[in-house]
Amino acid sequence: MPLLEGSQNTIITGCNLVDQSTNNNTSGQTGIDILFEASNHDAAHDSSARDYDPRCHPGTREQHIEDMVYWAVPAAGADNPLPLFWMKGLAGVGKSAIAQTCAEKLKELGKLGATFFFSRNGRDKAAQFIPTIVYQLSTEFPDYRALVDHRIRDDKAILGKTMAV
Image 1 (cartoon, rainbow, N blue to C red):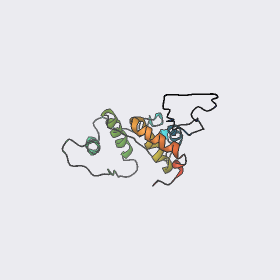
Image 2 (cartoon, rainbow, N blue to C red; image 1 turned 90 degrees about the horizontal axis):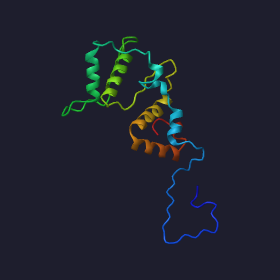
Image 3 (cartoon, rainbow, N blue to C red; image 1 turned 60 degrees about the vertical axis):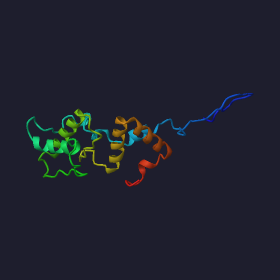
Image 4 (cartoon, rainbow, N blue to C red; image 1 turned 45 degrees about the vertical axis):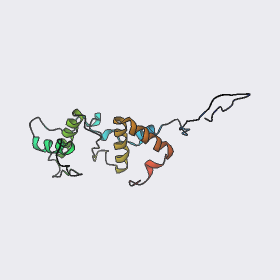
C-alpha cells in the first residue's frame, strides 16, 4: 500500500517519512506459504506418514549409525569428512531404517537440518526435493527463513525453474 494512500488535506511538518514496505504480494500469501504448498511434508523424517517406516532395532547396525552420525557431526579437531555420504545396498537390506535412525539421532543432538525420504509411494517427485529441504531449513533458521521468504515473494516463479536456479 503506498504511503498515505487515500489521504486528503494532509500536512506533515518536521519529520522524515520512509516507506519500508517490502510486501508487493497481492495474493496474501507469503513466500513461505508458497514454499509450504510446493513441499512434500510426507518426505520428512518426522512426518506422520513415516510413523511406521522401518527403524533399526536397538543394538543393531550400530557401526553404520555411528559412521553416519560421525560423518554428519565430526569430532572437534577431526579431518573434514567427505562432502557426500553414499550408502548402497540391495533393496530391503535396511538402508532407509539406518537413515531414519540416524536422522532421529541427529535431531536429538540438535544437528539435523532437513531430510527427504524418497519412496515409490508418493514421495518420488524430484521437483519437490528442493522446496521440501528449503522449507525444513527455513523452520530451523529464522534468518534463512526471512531470506527465502523475500526471494520467493520477489520471484514467485522460482519454484518452477530448473534445479540449478
